[in-house]
Image 1 (tube, helix red, strand yellow):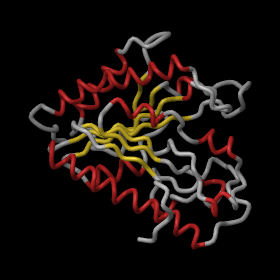
Image 2 (tube, rainbow, N blue to C red):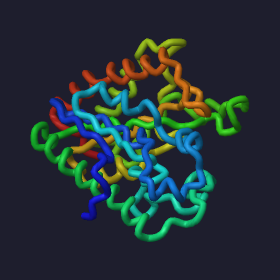
Image 3 (cartoon, rainbow, N blue to C red):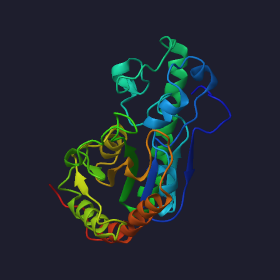
Image 4 (cartoon, rainbow, N blue to C red):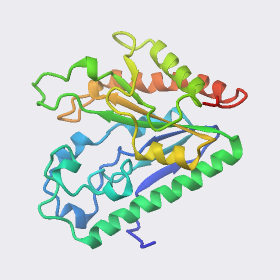
Length: 269
């Protein structure tokens, strides 16, 4: 594989336990040759990235944080769509001043390939030690696309926490997912219990799909999307109290998930 640069494109911390927390859209860095050609400015990139999710991965010992912006390469898209080329690839945003040449795209896709190779190595290691594992695939999503003073999106279609379980065999992993939903919803969150629902806004992306296809018997990836109710999505400023509460709410689910993993095995569909 071609060397991109000496700078890391993601961080991996390996620890004990069968749960891995990932924040693959936390990154904001862009390689110089990409930055020179981008039309979208830094605030525009930040608005669509998932800041602070990297900090939340600390709820478990094994964690992965992406460092590159999704506007260079999106690790949660299929490989053929991992580099946004057209506005329709990126919520209608004009990403490039001119289409990126093939060699730049190839170097961005080399990051993608390297990441998935590293994830297979990591998850095989966890599988070998524990038999089965759960990935907390952490993300955030926007709900004020009409501007900071515009109305928020309808809460009926935009839960505070959207769990994407559409890429998994839901029946097989029902014990784990149901326990996660129960424990997250039971957390004493500031202002009231969290609105936690499945597959309302998102059903999960390519990363979770890859995990379920690569580890069909042993890997359960839950795409956990927090609405950006804990921050001002147009400025990036967060409410520390709410962000810390999300961290603790996620932490509260870990014992139950481990308990469910320790039962006799995944339920067969």
